[in-house]
Image (cartoon, rainbow, N blue to C red; front, side, top):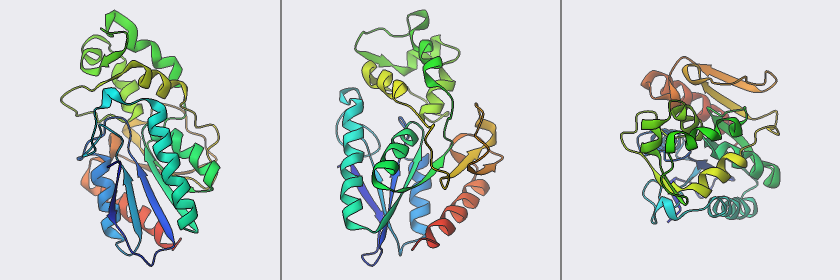
Amino acid sequence: EIAQCLVGSEMCIRDRLYLPGLGQNLSGPYFLYTQIANSLPMLFHKQIEYYGFGNSAGELHEVEYMDIENEIDWFCSKMSLEYNHFYIVSSGFSSSLAVKMSQKYLAKNIMLDPFFGNLKSLQSVIYIDNCVRSENYIDTAEIYENCDDSEKLFRILGESYNRTKGLYLSSSLLNTMISNYELSNVRKETQIYLSEDFVVDEIPDDLNLHSYKCDNIFMRPIVRNQIIIAISKEFEGSK
């Protein structure tokens, strides 16, 4: 399984597709996505679980970037035929894919902590001090131990800051993820939710920004409830 229906109504004419970031676990955005879905059970909510993520089958180190992009493209294509309109809610590296799919299928976007800078400038941190032990695979735990700037890169990609163990993934997946990351074509109506303690770049001031005093991926319960209410209102207005 690469997607699960969080909750849904057969009467709904607009779908919601949730895309997590790199290595996000069930206590991070997955939990937030589920709470948003449960707040509006009359709508239809679907969450992607990339191979090796969440409860999906497979191993992360076997996944390549095009596998992920093709998964999302297939679902968006299917949703564009089944529904009049649909939303894509994204976090981490998935925000770049969300922009691409929204342009292709005319979907609306909601982004959590997107990064508008150039990820390629951070790419070198994963090769410092022999962090990469294999030409084909990367153990992010080793990168954290040896590279001081690595946490910034991986938090941008979506990995939870409080994760206790690293990820084992293909180096080509990570490199392509960084090389393909692009948010310059974000549509003006996109709703963007930012945690102030994690803003690491300059945000364009002509977008719909909602800022909250909290840390990455909105772990504070009070802030999380505020975001659930705000996004729920956005969804309800589009039924």
